Image (cartoon, rainbow over all chains, first blue to last red; front, side):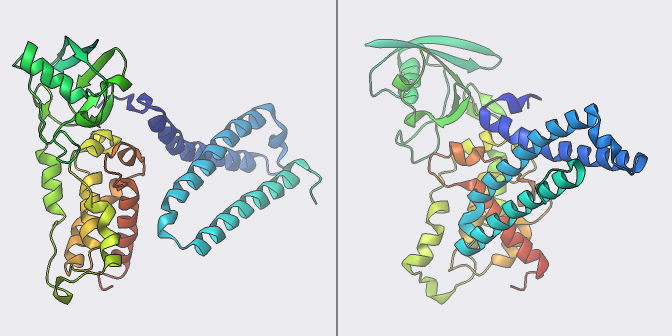
Length: 112
Length: 227
């Protein structure tokens, strides 16, 4: 099979981005943890490189979240509607909550 | 009458044919025109001409389709026809489908035992209706990149077939079938690309079926097949 099969059509390409987003997020997490180990005071979060990498990873995390939710809607035929709604609300709530917490913690954003 | 150019892959090369068509002509009609009027050596499979038998699956402009259901008027002036992807080519547009056929056999596609005298309510029948529509046309195998990368993977149609019998209320062999489905080259290879469901001409939705099988398989593994 052609190594560039994932350029074959839009759906293959979106699948490839979906799968790639996981390792990108994992790489960012490792980068964050290593940076934190070197600088426990979180001074690195203001650095241009960290900010640029984080913004790029945000794009992949959005791809990851949205494609995962899209795939989940395809699976929802096998979940009862009450479970489905609860799951979505829980996931979206967790994501928003965690995002607000992290923004407040690292950048002193005035959410609290 | 208008003309199209059929660009047919024959071995490593393409051969072009100019073929007249009208508003009702399908790609299969065009291929038959070539065989009857221009080149009798062109080899391809076909049978029912009406989307029931699954014989005429081919790649048309890079997409796996049933050629009897693909109208020439909906395509461009130059139509590229190739054998189905991911299968060894026997000749011209005819491919070797022994591998998926073997995978079908491996999921035990028959009802085992006898439950309730083989009676089935309309609701029970409805549960297996969608997956019963599979015509084994192999378009899903052609669309599946996982099968293209690793032909040990059971594939979409075998998964749909396994689910059709697992969900059948008349079947008593669910444990044995699940042992086959949850094996090393079973359902777990699927990473939900979804292209199989996109190309399926019978709307079987093998992608969703494989995820259902994964849930069944998980339950089977956790309970040791007791439930």
